[in-house]
Image 1 (tube, rainbow, N blue to C red):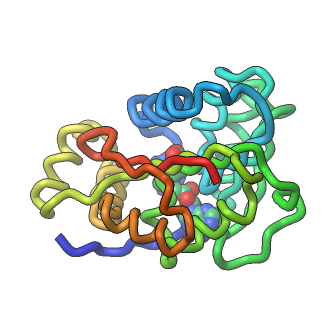
Image 2 (spheres, rainbow, N blue to C red; image 1 turned 60 degrees about the horizontal axis):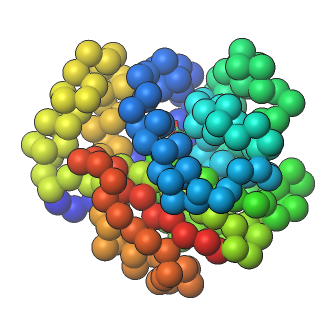
Length: 222
Ligand SMILES: C[S@@+](CC[C@H](N)C(=O)[O-])C[C@H]1O[C@@H](n2cnc3c(N)ncnc32)[C@H](O)[C@@H]1O
C-alpha cells in the first residue's frame, strides 16, 4: 500500500486532548523496554525527546532512571500545555523540561544547543514532510556514541489491514483517536524505507527491526 501523508503537528486542542487521554500503555511500555534492553549501560544523563506529545514516555523513562534529565520538544502548543500538566502531576518538573520547537522548520532553540547523551522519538517520523529532518536533528544534537531510539508505527499492507489494527487495539477509544490512528498507519513507513532514510543520513549502521505487529524501531549509536 502506498504511503498517505498526514499533517505534521497535532495542535487541534480536541485532537491533542484525545491523544493525551488515550490508552498508550502497551506502546509506551514497549518503547521504554526497547530502550532499556538495547542500551543496558545507559542509566543517566541528558536526553532529548523529539515530538514528545503529552510526555508520557519521558515521564516513564525519568521514573526508571533516577538521574535522567529530559528536554522534551514538540511543535504543537496544545501538546506542550498537556505535557506540562502531566509532568507537574508526576512531580517531574525538576527533571523534564518542555520546549516548543517545530523541528525541520524552525531554528534550534537555545535549550537544545548543548549536545545530548541520548535522543529518543516515538511516533514522530511518520508525521514529517521530510523524514530526513529527524535523522539530521539526531546527528546534530546527539553526542558521538549517544544511544538513539526511534520507534514508530509500521505501515500495514492494505487499508483493510489498517482498519483491522485500529479495531483490534483502539476499538473502544473515541472516534477522533481511531481516525488519527488509522491515518497514522497509512502515513507510517516500512523497514526498507527507514533503512533508505538512514543510508541517506549517514547512519546506515543503525538497526531497523519490526518490534510488534504494528511498530518498528530504528536504533543505534550516533
Ligand atoms: C503521534 S504524536 C507522538 C507523541 C509522543 N512521542 C508519544 O509517543 O506519545 C506526534 C507528535 O509529534 C509532533 N510533531 C509533528 N511534527 C513535528 C515537528 N515538525 N516538530 C515537532 N513536533 C512535531 C506532534 O505535534 C505530536 O505531538
